[in-house]
Amino acid sequence: MEDKDLEAEIHPLKNEESKASEGQANSAKKESAPKQPGRLSRWRTAAFFLSLFLCLAVVFAFSFVIPCPVRPVSQRTWSRTYANATTYTFLAVGDVNQDRVQDVLFAFQASNGSSSGVNGSCSSEGFASPCAFLTAQSGTNGYTLWQRPVAEDLLLMDCSTEHDQAPACLVIGKPDLFAAIDLETGQTLWQEAGNFEPNSTVLSPLLKIPDVTGDGVSDLLVFSEVGEEIQSHFYSGKHGTQMGSNRSLHIPGRIGHLMQVTETGAHYVLFYTEKAVYGYSLNELYHMAFNSPADRSFGLKEDPRWAIAIDRTTHKVSLLSSGEIHYLTKMPVKSGADFLVSRLSTLELVDGQRLGSVWVTDIPHILSEPVLGSYGTNEVDIVIESRVSPKKKKVMIVEGPSGDIEWEAEVLLSGVGSPRPATLATADHRSVFLFWGTYQGDTNGTEPWEGAQQQHLYMFHPSFPNVLLEMSNSTEPVVAFEGVLFERSRHACYVLLTGPQAGSAPGQVVLSKRKLKEDIVGSRVIWLSQLAQDTEQSVRDRFLRMRYRSLR
Image 1: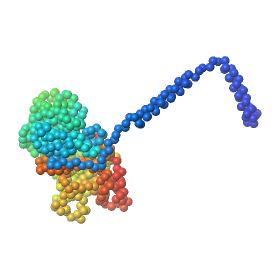
Image 2: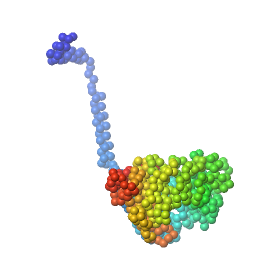
Image 3: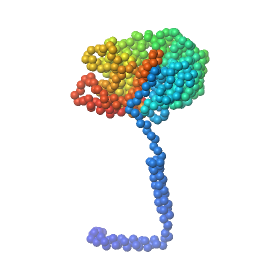
Image 4: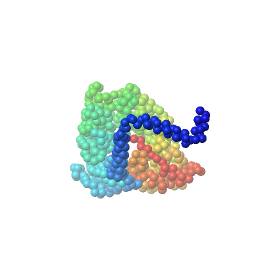
C-alpha cells in the first residue's frame, strides 16, 4: 500500500489515467441502457423564469403603476380666527377625515359661520341668531373639514362616544335639544327632545352606561339640577329617545359627579359637595327611573363592599380627611377604581374597592383640578397647582402610589385666565409637563404689577429636574388648552383656544396649533439649580431629541 501511494505522488498523471480508464469501462457497461430525455429539467427552468417574471411584474406595479398613499404634510403651526364671536370651554380631538392625523373640534357662538366659505347659518337650521356652531378643523393645516349650527346655545358636549361603531358627538342645547352628530361628516344621526325642565341646568359630564335596553348599544345617563334637586335622565344610545321617568335626588350644593366601576363590575355614580361625597349605584338609579323589579336590570349589580361603605339612608361615603371639597378626580383604569379627593388644603387618594383612604398629603390652597402624568417610569403621578400668596403659585408633582412630593417649583406667578396643566407621554415611559405662569426671576423677586396680563408656557421633563423651558406667551385669557399627539407616537403639539366666552360681549376667537419642537428651538432655559456639565444648547438638544408615545 505504501508503494502504491508513493507511486501516485511521484506520477500523478499516471494515476489519473488509470482512474479515467476505469471510468470508461464503467460507462461502456451503461451504454446498453436507454437514455431518458430532460423534459423535467426543461419544465423546472420554465417555472423558474415564469415566477421570476411574475415577481418583477408585481414589483414594477407597486413601484410605478399603483400610486403610494400620499402622506399629509402637517404645518408646524396654524391659526384660525373667528370675528364677532364667543366660544365655549370645549375642545376635543379625533381623526375626522381618516388621514391618521388627529383633527380639532370646538364650538363657537356667532350670527353666521366662519368667513372661510363654509355654508351654514342659524336660520338654515331653524335657530335664532346668534347660535352655536360646531366645527372640525384639519390637524394638518387648520382647514375647515365641516361646520354647522347645532343649537341656539350649548349646554353640554361630548365627542368621545360612538354610534353604531362610528365616532360621534353628543350635543345638548337650547331649545330642549339632544342630538348625535356624525364625527366624520357633521350630519345629524338622531335628534330628540331632552325633556329638561325650563329652569334646569344640565350637569357635566354626560355618562355612558351599559346597555340597559338590550339593543347592543351603550346607553346614556344625564343629570340636571333644579334648585337643590338632581334629576336623572336615561336615554337610548341608539335612538336618543328618553327611557323611564325623571327621578330626583336631594343633593344640595352639588359641585360635580363621576362614574366609578368597581372590581366586581358594579357601576356607581359619586356626587360631591363642599362637605361630603354621596354614592348611588347605577342599579338603584335604574330601578328608580323605570320602577322595575331587580330581575329586570339587564346585568346591573351592586358591590358588597360599596354597599357596606355607603350609608343606606344618607348615601354618604365615609372619608378619612375632612375639609372643603373642590374636586373629585378619577384615576386611570390600570389603577382600578381609585379616585382623588382634592380639598382646600389636602389631597387624598381613596381606594375604589373598599372606599378606604390610601394616603393623605397636605397641599395648601389647591387651585385647579389635578392632572395625571408620569414623573417616574411607568408610574401614575399627579400634577397639582397650589396658591402660596395672593399672586404666587406653586407647581408640584405628587407620587401616585405614596403621596410623596417628588418635584416642586415655587418660581411661578399665577396669570389671569391660566388653564390647568397638560401632560404628554414620552418614549421613556415618563411624561413632559406643560403649565402656564410667569417666572419669578423676571420680576427680581418682587410681585408683578397689577396690570400684567402676559403669561408664559413652561415645559418640564423629569430627566432635567433642575430645568424649565420657557416656550411661548399669551396676553389673551386661554379658554381651553390641550397637549396633543397629532400622529401616532409623533407630531407632539399643543392647541390653544382664546377669546371671549359665551354669555359675554362678542370679540375675536382664535384657535391655534403649535408644534413643541418649534417652540423648543427658540425657548429660554431657566435653571432652577445650575449643573456644570450642562449647557443651554445641550438641554434644548435633549428636549428636541425626545420621542413621544400614544397611550391608546
